[in-house]
Amino acid sequence: MTLTKVASVSLRSDASYVQEIESGMHTFWADEPTSRGGDDAGPAPYDLLLAALGACTSITLRMYAQRKGWDLGRIDVTLRLLKGPEEERIERSVRVSAGITDEQRAKLAEICEKTPVTKTLRAGTPITTQVEVAR
Image 1 (cartoon, rainbow, N blue to C red):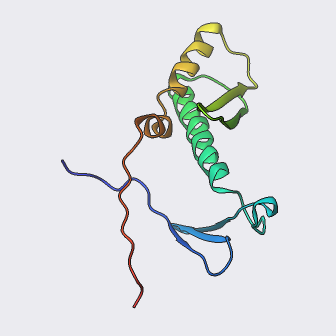
Image 2 (image 1 turned 90 degrees about the vertical axis):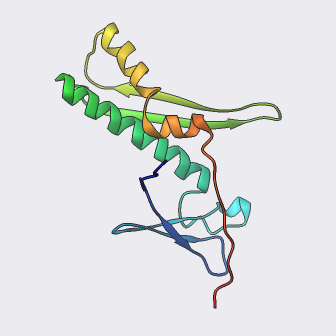
């Protein structure tokens, strides 16, 4: 099976928790909040995970609606990661500002479950890791 690169990022960190993230032409930061020992210089890792899911959801819905000729108006996506001793889940809420039919709303809910990042998270994608020493 041949795998195709879908995304690529690189991160750099010196002494603090602040992470400089490079993705293509974009540079941004991640960190932990001060309550967890960070400098709060950027979103925490779980916030970035939710942002990726939310962005994918909104973009996918917009693409689908454009192909169908539907006006969704503004799309707002709100996500929460909830963790307990025996359960972990993400709650996703999607709101559109344009009036849509019940059938359209049901189809959009179905599309949310098929977004690429949703599928990746649900699949439990394997992660391989190498640790090297810089020379």
